[in-house]
Image (cartoon, rainbow, N blue to C red; front, side):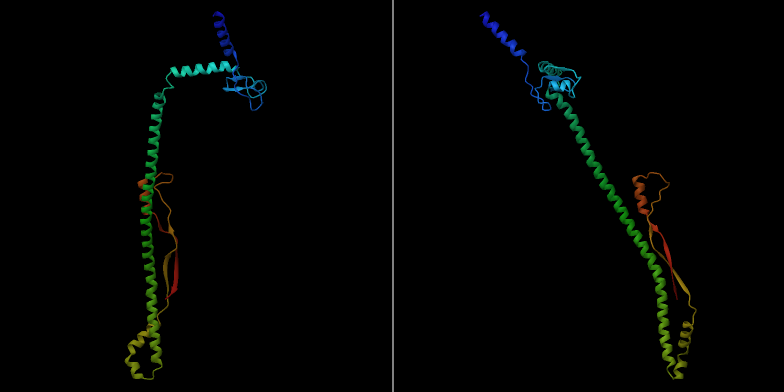
Length: 240
């Protein structure tokens, strides 16, 4: 019996002393025979002597396995392998993630809302500027139209005078003397140069209270509500 027990113990020792088979090195084509403590990988003799692990602290795979298991045991005893440990941190992380995503959505919605306000303010101001331009041109064009009507009347008077000049009836001419003479006076009026001022552009420059001063959103909206004024203009002359 003692011999049998001794044999069992001996085989135990043999198993424990056998080196672990930890694969081969793809770079050098040799069996991995050591564990690099610094890089935490198994390596072959060529890696140790000539490769990138030269000078690093190494140990046998058997010792490495015990070292790793000791690390696992310590981590287990610390409770860090319990699901509750990671769950606690994951709960905080996921809560932070949810808050960040919610805030992101809120900020994006605020951007849409603010730009809608900017768009509304710009659209309103655009219509106001167009109305101002319409009023300006309507006034200036009416000045031209007034002269057009005046000279259309002169045109009619000149035709009437031509008809009277070709009519040999002196009695009729005298009877229409007031009309005829007034027509002559009208045609003999001095010709003048008339001028109208026409805008050629709109100045959309944005003037803040001072250069380099940041404007708040409400100030920006107020500025957009008043942006735009008549820019360059030209004088148009015509004889009338």
